[in-house]
Amino acid sequence: MKITMAHGSGGKSSEELMEQVFGRHFANPILDKMEDAAVLEVSGRIAFSTDTFVVNPLEFKGGNIGKLAICGTVNDLLMMGAQPKYLTCGFVLEEGLEVELLERVVATMADYARQAGVLIVAGDTKVVEGQGGLFINTSGIGIIEEGIHISASNCRPGDAILLSGTLGDHHGAILSARMGMENGIHSDCALLSDMTEALRKEGISVRTMRDVTRGGLGTILNEIAGKSRCQFEIEETAIPMKEEVAAFCDILGLEPLYMANEGKMVLFLPEEEAEKALAILRDTKNGKEAAIIGRVREGSGVRMITRLGGSRLIDVLYGEGLPRIC
Ligand code: MG
Image (cartoon, rainbow, N blue to C red):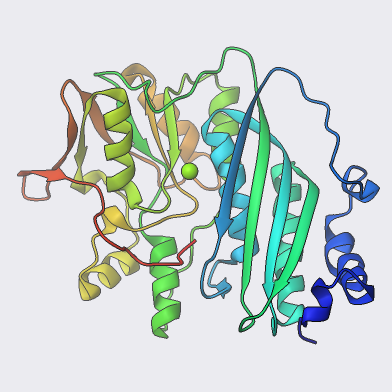
């Protein structure tokens, strides 16, 4: 069965789609009330984030647009030191979308929401003319415990820079799918909560955390360096990469520093806690290949010590990059 304009009419077909797809997978006591707005009990400081997902193809090795939509917003909340609690989901369905595909996406979203410990408390669906596409917006609220102040402006000279795993996997998987290339590259799309939770439990004082998504590590480091008014020095040989992704980048002339990931984060913390934090990360499911990749210095910009021992200025990503990657 395919989505038709009738599914967006607000009539019988809309109701069936709501019940059979969204209601069935997302059910919880807050959503089930189906009122004009969800009513939530929260107190203290909250983190509030929104993101829209337009990835093409909708399904790829290692995930689908629904997994991205949940992990993306949950990870953004986690990066502020928040405990994600509630999400909303807005769906734009193009006419001709296979209902089976939509259901796979929705089931994945329900699964990852459960894993992240968040409730989907409000949603919306619109149907538009098109060619079977699907776009998803997720917004999320997380609660920030007292005493936690994580911000991109907190880095200080002397801090260590840690990366939670290999670069380029998501970008490589999407690009391979678009080009019809058969290889073993899987998207790294994942919840970062195992790592943030482990660090929190051990009382590691993280100053800054950022998920390494669009723009890649190079762009994100530049943003944080600018906000903290510091210089970052990273070492090329310390940056973890899967052999297959490195080979893929070589063949296509891609710069891994600007490739998007969906399950990696960069962290800044006091030098004396770096080794302990590294051991904690490596003990988690998603942090096995974590590494200390550099340090914070006085100054500005981002420099990389290259494989050959030289020093190269790393700028932000200019131009397009790959569109519709997330
Ligand atoms: Mg982010």
